[in-house]
Length: 434
Image (cartoon, rainbow, N blue to C red):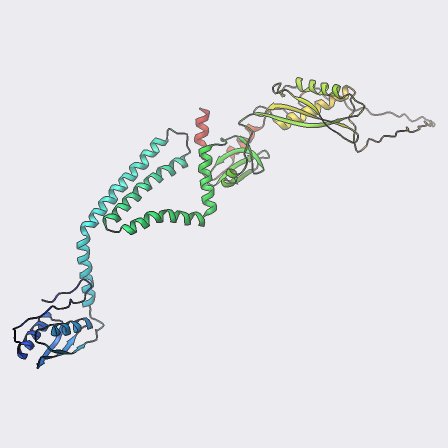
């Protein structure tokens, strides 16, 4: 019986032997019987004259025609072959090729069925191990003070590696070693392509992971970053939300926060502030320094350690400029209110001690003096200089309210405000407070 190769084409026939001395009739009969047995030819006719074979009839395709010619040529005693078999055009409703293709696919599926079963078993085991890996990593990372996002990313990364190993093993079992290496290597390539396509999103996401890991600030800390000063409200996967001292909510991209210089005023609550005050050239500088230091020493919000300083800053056109340095506890007091109170009390102390505070814009010096003649008229006009109203001696005036920090009020405003995204600082803040 003729056989068909896996690609659907008939295999070339081998050598056909009849008798040592083959007669034309025997050759014709042998070839005709074979053609009829294949059922590939319609009305096959074979004629042999002096060893020359003449083939006639119809067939479905050129492969069968070629096969008949090879059969006759390989028959013993055949000198030449004249292949006159005609290839009949295929009809539209001929479903034999389709059925043949489906038959081949079914046979291929049956041959691959054991490998498919093994692949499904390996994938199932890999999926179970991946889920177990994610669960164990989540439980193991709970003891660490990490944000929920960071724990979830690390756990799912471990599970993804297990699934990738299972997929690689399945491809190796299937004999697709090159494809397995491509998949493993392509994982990094896909990550690179996605990183380039979504560079800003990826950059902010990675920055949020690093910020939640390094924890340069906690929820409620007063920080200055990218030129914005405010209390940290929350850290999301994209932005860091600050509540400014003006009560405005500002969202700074995490990539900007990660690359910027961060000033955390809460990490060390003690803060130094300063201001400049100008005295006249005729006034004693040491005496003015003592007066200012006495005010700082008696002020309840000014710290004695580190000690306050009153230093000569510069010599102006009409004043000697003194810079007053003092420290305060920023966690308890507002430096804006304390600075206002200190400036007011230093100014009052200088006036009470007779230290002048010249104004560069209005101070005019006449080296040779200015002659003044008093003219008295009827109903002499009283020239009276209005004395300034006495300033209060209290540390904080009504306008300055109390010197307490307004941090709690701003934090309460932040809690009442609406902010999208999960707060990645909640866990670290609660852990540190406990």
